[in-house]
Structures are given as C-alpha cells and as structure tokens.
Image (cartoon, rainbow over all chains, first blue to last red; front, side, top):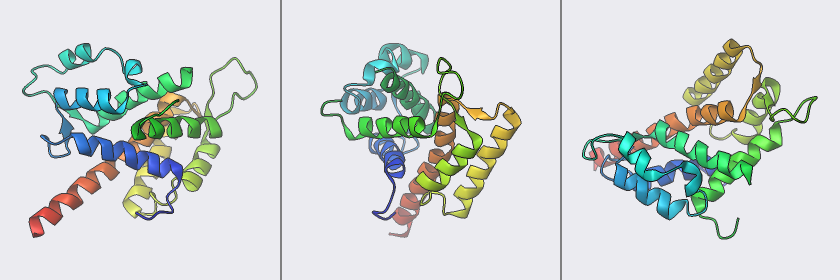
Length: 88
Length: 106
C-alpha cells in the first residue's frame, strides 16, 4: 500500500503488523501466551494495564502449549486498551 | 501520552477517529455514538484506500447491513471497534496468505 494512506489506515496496518511480528510460532495466525505477554509488555507500556491482568488472561487461554490467541481475540484486547485511552 | 509506542499511537488514532465522527446527540450525558450516515462518511473518508479492493468493499457493505439489522441506528464505541476489527481481520489474512504464497514460489 502506498504512502497516501490515511492515519486511520496506517493505524490499522500497524495493529496488524504488530500482531504478525509477534505471531512467530503460529506463522502469523495466532499468538502463544508467551508471545502475547511479550507484545503487551513491550508494545503497550502505557496501556497494558487497561488490558487487565495478563496472568488471568493466560490462564483463561488454557493449556500453555496449545493455547492460541487469534487475530480477533487480539483485536478485542486492543479494544480494551482503547477504552483505557478514552478514560484518560 | 509521553513517548508512546507505535502500537499505542495506532490505538489512539482509532480512538480519536471515533471521537471525530461521533456525537452526544441531544443529551451530553449519553455516551457518544456514530450515526450510520456518519459511519459511511467515515469509511469513505478514512478508509478509502483499504476498501478499494472489491472483497474488502463487500465486507464493509456486509458490516453496514449487519448494523441495519440491529435497528439501533447508532454505533457505540464497542460496535465501532468490532466493525473496524471486521475490516482489519480479512486484511490481516490477505497479508499472511500473500507472504505464504511468496514463500512457496521461491
């Protein structure tokens, strides 16, 4: 895509790219609990707390060897971060 | 936000975009919402490059159709976020498939 993208489009692209960057094991299809944790810690230093306690989230995902966070779930998580933004 | 990351910037842009198109309507105590008309305007003004692809455009039309079913007529922040996710998700898939097919042809 070209440089003429709007800010909103660039933002969406960024959210997608970050997911792809961290979804190494799942070949860009899903994040493992570890990858998710890395992403939140490294990329959401200010908004991470809005996402809620990570330990609980990881536990909810079930068996750590098989747990997968797909794009839709990741998007929902960013939604929680976004709601945190709005409260500021 | 001081020294925010690229991802945090992105989230903030999407939040600001909602605020740009949403209004309180008559009562300022009610949460902000986007009307269907303004949502269409937003799609054509802010997502005109991403939705040029026919597949994506069809996905967007379907999103608006689904909104019609809801009858509420106005889009809350949660609905907005889900809708943008509905646009982002197929794009993410296309990018992934494209990269995989490049790998296969190599």
